[in-house]
Image (cartoon, rainbow, N blue to C red):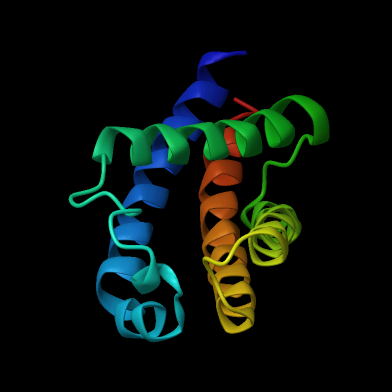
Length: 140
């Protein structure tokens, strides 16, 4: 792994962390509390959450994107990064959310759809930034 991939993943992780905070702490909080089944499982959620763990989760996700973009697919433009970020995130989160919905009583069908779409959109934004960093002044 080269330095450019690591930097792209790190910047992507910071962006992912901040977008997650903005979206889940402010924009869709009411939707999730209304449609989540977590309220029936008192004590399951950590309060407050482990922010270091959340950041490491963001970093592992963005490192995956950066390695795919930089080492396997040569994705270095904003457009291609956004499209690949959407596609990878959509499929990854659809798989995760369907698995959670089908095996546990934690989320309802509406959260499967909304959470998958939110993560696909943020994946596109993060993918665009990662690809931009990977392609920035690469020809020089």
